Image (tube, rainbow, N blue to C red):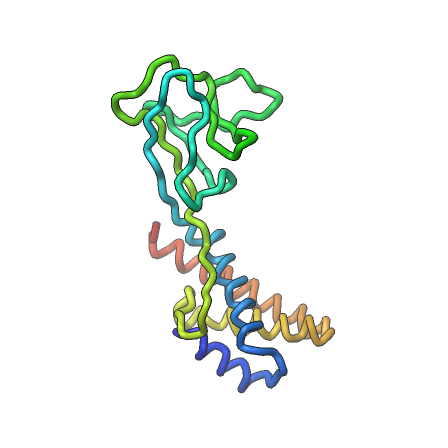
Length: 183
């Protein structure tokens, strides 16, 4: 379903003075949550380790906060906190790079370091784009946008009711999505 159809439906169900741009922002909030909390798509990069080098750049567009797992020679290593700094693991360097410990003493001939990261959410930029939740789960968009309209119109009872519906809708979608076995 297109974003424009959601906006048209909302404007019919709950007349309001908010622009399509504002509603697109609210739809991005919903789809951003779906992307980050339900879809959880990942990517990875294989990195050649270099002798005496602890810091490695992440792929373009990947922030350290998106890194979910790191493997050295196929074995997972854990994040290092400042409390346990001299144990095997990985951490964020002051330059934002992925740092591993211990520092490699030899260079790889085959990539021995793999980082796995969440793919970042890319917001919709036009109402001609499609939403993430299919029918019949798309009702969550209606409830969320109605809640936001109520919030900014200072109708807290309406806001709370619509957020309850939205939360139930997204929970229902998440359960359905999980049952589909989609990874």
